[in-house]
Image (cartoon, rainbow, N blue to C red):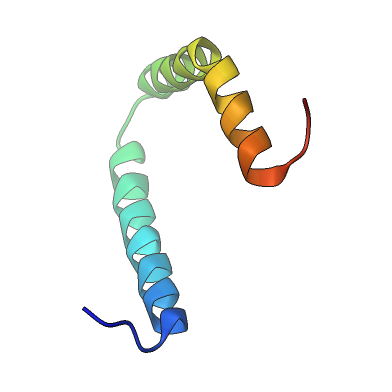
Length: 66
C-alpha cells in the first residue's frame, strides 16, 4: 500500500486509540476498587521488572539519560 498522506494515517491511529481507550474506560468503570488496586499493582510490578529495558528504550528514543 502506498501512503499518500501520512497525516491521515496518524489521525486514524489516534482515532483508533481513542476508541480503544473509551472501551477500556467502560470496562474499568464496572470494576471494584479492589480490582483496580490489583490492576495498578500488577502494572507497577511489571514495569518495575522491566525497568532497565524500559530505561534503555527511553534513552534510545530520546537521547536523554545515561
